[in-house]
Image (cartoon, rainbow, N blue to C red; front, side):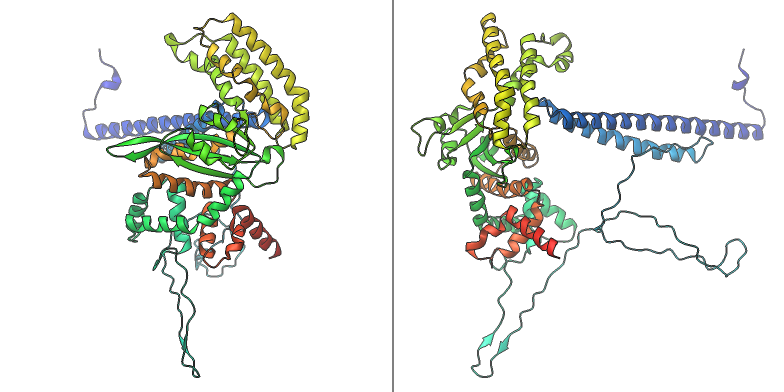
Length: 545
C-alpha cells in the first residue's frame, strides 16, 4: 500500500506544480533551519560575552587570584571572537534564505555602538535628490530635512615622495654660495623619512613582523624596498637612538627596586639554534605611589649563566624582585660591591606550585589519569589568596601606608602560614608531591617575607613577567634571532618600545618624532626626548593651544 504523497501525477502540468511546491517547501525548511542556526549562534555568542564580562568584573572587584586568570580571559576573548563571527555569518545566511520564503528574517540584538571619536574628520557625501515627485511627477519639491547615515571607513596607506628644495644663492660682493643644509636622514645618503622608519621599527620589534614579510607587503603596495634596504635602515636607527637608550638604562638601574626575570629565545648557531635568554629589569614604582616614570630594560645572552645578571646589575644597589633562580644568588652576598641586594621572592611562583596540585577543574578533565586533589595544597592556596586580597586593597598607597597595613593584617597570616606549613611538612612522606612546594617556600622563607619589612616591595614579580610577554608571543612569528647582535638589537628596541608603552605613549608616534628631531637636538638636552618628558611637553603644548 502506497502513501498518497508518494504518488506522482500523470500530466505534465500537475508534475510541474508539484515540483514547484516541493521546491517552495524545501526553501521554507532551509530558511527555518538557517534562522534556527542564527538564533543558536547568537545565543552562544551572547552567553560567551556575558561570561567574559562577569569574569572581568570579578577580576576588577576581587583582583586576579590565580595565574590562570589572565590566560583564561584571553582564551574567552578568542572564543568570543569566533562565536561572534559565526553569529554574523549565520545571521546573513538566514536573511538570504528568508528572502525566498515566508519565514521572518532573524535580526541579532547587538550591544549599543559607541559614538565615533570626535577627532575623526567627517566627509559629507550628499546623494542627489530626485528632480521630480515620483508619485505625481511635479517638480515643485521643497526640502523638509535630512537623515544622516554614518559609516566608518579607512583610507588605504598612502605613500608619497617629499621633495625638499634647497635653493642656492651667490653673494654679489664676495661671490660665495649660500645654501640651507640638507634634511637629516638616519643612513648616509638615505631616503627614508622618520615616519617610515618608525613604522618599520615598530612593526618588526613591536608587532613581531620580520623584515621579509614587510618587504613583501610593501611590494604589493607598489613600493620596492628590499630586505637588505630595510635591514640597513634598522641598523642605522639603532645607532642613532643609542643616546636615548642609554638614558633609559641609567634610569632603570638607578631605581630603589627592580623586577627581574628572563625567558628563552632561540639564537641561530651553526646548523642549529641555541637556547638563549632575554633578560628584563623593570622599574615600576606605581604600586607604592612612586612618582618616578616606569621603564623596562632588556638584555640578551646565549645561555643562562649567572655571570649575565651579575654584569647587568653590577651598578645596581637596592631590592631585586625575582624568582628563586640560583644565578641571582651572588647578588645577595654580603661582600658584593657596591653592596648586597635585598632579595624579594615572588609569591605567585610559590602559589603556582600549590595550585597545580589543587586545580580541581584541570584534574576533572583528566578522567582516569586524574591525580587526587591535595587538601594541603588547596588549603595553602586559600591562605596565600588571603594575602593577595590584602595586596589588592593597598595597591597604589604610599610605602608607609602599605607597610602599616601589612604589619597589621599580613604578618599574622604569614606567621600562621609558616607554622602550618612546618606542621604539615612533618606529617608528609618524601614521596608526597606537595612536599616540593612546601620545601620550596620554607627553604627560602626569608626571601618570601621581605615584603613585610618594606612597603615598596610587591607580593609578585608580575611586572617582569608582563614585560616578557611580547617575546613569548613574538618568537612564534620570527622563530629565532639570527645572531647575537640581532638578539641585542631586539632587546635594544624592546627597551624603547616597552618603556613608551608603560608610559601610555604610542611607540610609533614617539619614535617618529624622536628620529625627526634627534639630529639637531642638543646632546645636553637628550633627556627631553625620553618618553615621559616627551609626553609632558606634548601635553603642555596641547593645553596651551
